[in-house]
Each structure stands twice: as structure tokens, then as C-alpha cells.
Length: 257
Length: 262
Image 1: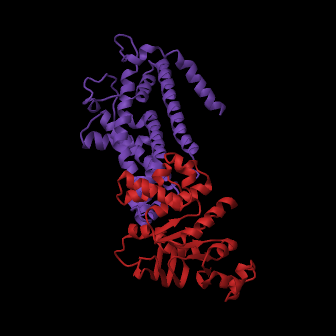
Image 2: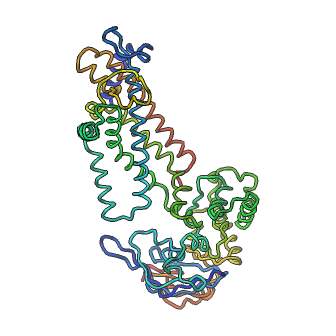
Image 3: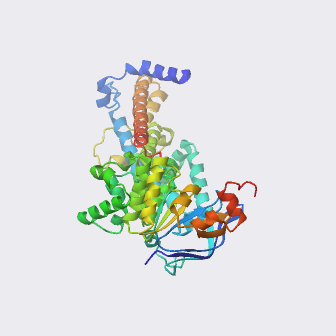
């Protein structure tokens, strides 16, 4: 198990009462393990839909349909009989706004392990400390683990959510604009953290911030109107975009499409 | 606003004189020439408890099912439409139905139980509606965070959604307590008119019993207890005010703890 994701001719539709939208068009994309892939593109281009397809969170939207497949270490995650909670344990997720549960810092981190049936106090203590350390939050909260998580600052809450996602032992971490609700200082800390996380996990992050994509990602994929325009090494994609539309977008000239 | 204030003021003016301590511990007795609201208070309490016992679990269960499990479709829309329509039916219609169905068909007669079952039908749509609203207000990202940690739908519900919604759910039950306390029409033909103290606490629900509101109505309609009716009105106003503040406290504390801002 290494956390290697591959999308193979993946299509996604959202259907409503008044017709449907073809949200993802024939996406084929290889996401190598232990790297950080940034998904960029204008709002509504399908990058979040794609992210949410990687742990089947998109299925919570009513009327969603797909064709094609997404492989995690060679196995199709959309195959019938797939154990969804197990899939999501392997493919963790962090959201745009921090989402601490209304419980203590400790209980937030212990949440996932407890669901898996970990009961031993010692074991939980170990997981909580390791996860908080991995999310660079241990030093700030070690003395107040029993306090409500809602008392943390926005940036701390977001690192808490990262720690909570790490506590279940994922192989892949999906991040949906994880810093867009944070101030620059907190953003800096999360970016630094993301840089460390990618050495241990496969990280896929949606971002609207071109600077961020350049700073932290190994590879970048550019989406437009549900299509994957191009995907490549971040340095190459930003220096020599292979497609006009990519160039327009990353230089901020998207309007003159 | 002035009109409401003047009504309250008038009730206070005429009712305050009636609130001697004796009325809270006595039964009304035309023979002894005494008046009291103890049986009415006890009957009201019975009706509240029995109604909640019947309606709260079903109502909250239905709200959970509709907002968490039911796939949006024709059936859900039909249920929601029905719930919406039921909520708008005048309470006297429920009273008629309750008297015929629970009272005659199920042979429960004029009893506190018949009244409570009737009221539970009446408040069920309210609990379902407000319960659904409360549950749907729990942010999607919070739910997805739980699922993202490997929670099943049920685990997510139990560990994240219900704890977040419990105050709101409690508030919707309190709201319904207010409705029950203030209801008279639906009780008039179902729960009966007796103002007796319970002889046996367990079998009391099977006997006829007037709630405070029904006692008040009867006192006014026979013209003998107009002043006493103002006393009851004041007691009812006091109970409803207390409920109002309790509900407010429940929802306000939730805001203080920042749970709404998630």
C-alpha cells in the first residue's frame, strides 16, 4: 500500500430536475505516491469535484453519476462492494474551513481511532501525540488537550483537522483549499506542514493561490470547464505551460478566453 | 405591540389577585365554595409528559430519517408535503378525530390518555419539521469530516450530528411543550372535564381530566369563575414565559460556544 491514485477516463455528471451538468470530462491522471499534486483552475472547473471523487465523497451529492474508474494501488475504488469507511480511512480529507468537532482537542484526534475500535488509553495517548506532532501542533496544545477544540485559533483548528485526518493512518490526504480561510501567518504554517506531509503521504490539494501551488507542489494539474487541460511537474507547467489556456490562467488573463 | 402589552397587563391586573397560595393546592369544589387549580396543573403535566412520550421519539426519529437517510425523491416530498399540511390543520379537527378514533374506536373514552394521543398527533409534524431544520443546519463539512475519518453513516450521526443538534432538538421539544400547555380545543372533546386529584397515579391517565386551559374554558362558559379564569390565564402566561426563556437560553448558549459558526 503506497497511496498511488490513478484516474482512468473518469466522467462525472450532476443531474438535477432541469437536466444535468457534465462536471468532469474524461479525466485520466496519474497521481504518483508521496508527492504533492496541486489542482488549479477557475471556480466551477471541476477540480473540487475531482478531489471529492478520490474518496467518493461526491456520492453524497444527490443525483451524481460517473463512468470510468479511479484506482487506489491498482484497485478500483468504485468497484461494487467497496468498503466506504475503509476507503475514507485510507484517503483522508481536510476542508476549506476548519471543522473541529464540538469536543475536546484530545477527543477530536482520538475520534477516528476510536471508531476503529482502539480503546486502550495508552495507545490513544500515543496516537494523539504522534498525530499532533505530525501536524506541528503538539507544542501549542499539549498542556490543554482536554479543552474544547473550538477555543483554538483558525490556523490551529486547521492543523487540528489535519492531525485528526492523520490519526486514522491514511495513505492519501485530500485538501480542499486548506488555507483559503486563514491569515497569511497561519497559511505559511500550513504550507510548511504540507511540505513535510508529502514525504510520508500522497497529498492532493485544491488551491486558488498560484504562489502556493508553485511553492509547495511537485506536480500541478490545470482544470478548465470539467476537462484536464494539462498536468505536469509544477516547475515546468509554470515556466512553460503546454497550453495557451494554462498560460492565460496562471498569468491571470483568463478573462479573454 | 401595544395591544399585546395591554392584554398582558389586563391579565396581570385581574389575575394577580387570584393567585393566592391556596389555589395551587386545592381542587375546585362548588360544595365547599372553594376554587383550586391543583388537579388542572397535575392533568396538564400528565398531558405534557404523555404527549411527549408518544410524539418525541417518533418525531425525532422521523426527522432523522428524513434529513439523514431518505434519498430525495417522490416519497420524501410526499412525506414532507403531508407533514406540512398536517401542521396547518386547526386543532379542533384533531380533537374531533381523536375523540372518534382514540375515544370510540379504541374505546379509551374521555381520558387524559385520549387527549395526549390526540395532541401527540397534532405536535408530531411540528417536531418533525423543526427537528429536520435543526439537523440540516449541521454543516456538511462537519459531517464529511466524520465520514472522512472512516465513520459510517450511523457513527457520524451518533458522534457528530446528534451532539451538535441536541440543543436544537431539545428546543423544538420545548416549543411543543408550549403548544401542549396552551391547547384547549383538541382536549375539550378528548380529555374530558373532570377536576379531580388522581386516586392512583398509574391509572389516572385513563380517567377524565381537564387541563388548565379546559378548566379555564369551562369556568368562563358557565360564567361562574371569570375572575378565577384570569388567575389561570396568568399561571399559563407564566409557564409559557418560562418556556420561552428556557428555549432562548438553550439556543443562545449554543451560539456562545461557537458551534453555529462552524
